[in-house]
Length: 212
Image 1: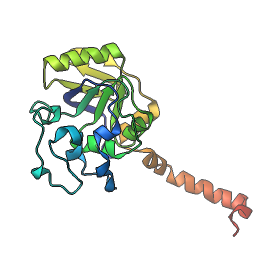
Image 2 (image 1 turned 180 degrees about the vertical axis):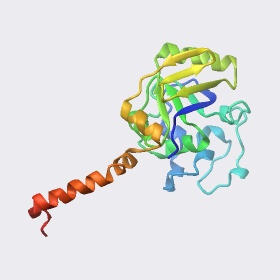
Image 3 (image 1 turned 180 degrees about the horizontal axis):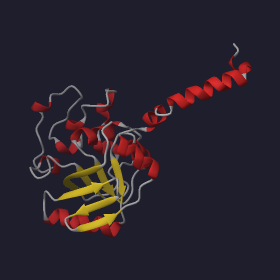
Image 4 (image 1 turned 120 degrees about the horizontal axis):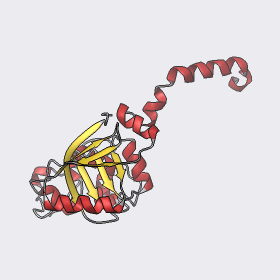
């Protein structure tokens, strides 16, 4: 997993609440269990004028010219801005895979669906929760200047837009995993030698536990 230390990217404003995982990635794309290749299907129902399946070539799809991801200013966007309860709905990890594969490394909202939030951290995407007044200010700026760039500094827990800077909270354990490009499994594997040593010591001190 790619570390997330600092990230500078174009802000994509979705000024709506309760964007659920089915909106992010419709159910027909859950057939694939690969963790890559979903970026072209992000917001599929709104992004295209015709229905698609996992094996439908994107070159044959008709883009919806009014949808934000199809506008020139946002095609290379990598920071999503939305309203409350982003990522609610089902627990599908594919929704985060689609965001990440599109190029999104940070999602900014007042609140997130709990499972979606955990899935983000396990896939190198930062779900950044900010107070509503800051969210409102960011929307005003994004709407006034399409293509507005923001910078997120995970190491220092800072969000910057031009000369404006905001601090944000981030659990230290999760911060370290993002900085080092680790999910929970990867973090655990870092202690493999200690785990093996403990198991060997336990085998010697409590051999009856290992008898078949």
